[in-house]
Length: 368
Image (cartoon, rainbow, N blue to C red):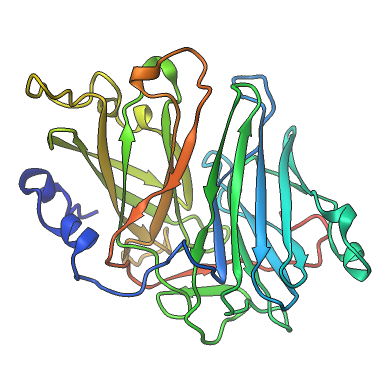
């Protein structure tokens, strides 16, 4: 893989700064502050206490900002890289009336995940039978991709959806919320199984970045990043390679690399121990402590058809979020406070890509 950001480590210029604020590769990128046709809930978790795991649930809310009724199709993508079904999807539908909002809770039921619609009992008329009560999926973490359907079951190009998620860790006593990544449609024909990013749907960015407060090794997890790509097809995880460049508070920089498929969640200290206090940063001036905070960027390439003989890769096509717990200055045992935010995105966009899923709505428990 070519790593164009390594030059940035030495010069503080080049493709990253051009991509984050310049006009190279300019195009239309997603706007998560607007309603969209395609939503990505980036960090779905459900686990039971025991065996090194905490008791965690995720509450997912989706809202129809239109007066028209629709059916929202959801795909829970398996984010477990050790699972043979990594990047498979578990499918289910959620009917929405006009101006409707629904909340789903992802609850652990070892070894699977139960998904319950909290509003199912409040549905009226024929819509009550259509709404599901509980669904079951065979994995416990990953992302959910959601889109509205048109009258014949194809993805709708109407920008009408928005949503967010709340992850609650009962064992540690914290919760955090994260808005869904909202991807707008630019109209055009959409097949039932494929989403063209960069044409029918807006493209993901060329580069993503985030600032962070340096955690310590003792207050793990401290901070973690979640990254995903939509440039893949079901049952065929892509190869996503990212060049990571980090800066401390006095602009000293270092680089790392990260490889995954369609989705990953990794602690900063596992990504690179230099991101943790007191390893972060060189000694700065007497009036400046560079060890407590910094920022990092992800410049990625995606091989959509990993495993074939074609070495073509797509630049960009990755987005994500950061989750932050107590920082080094607040190392007080359990992390009682947590917060999350989407990563900042470059002005420039990634190469066109495609998300291809296998649609199976007739299975009452979702496709596995």
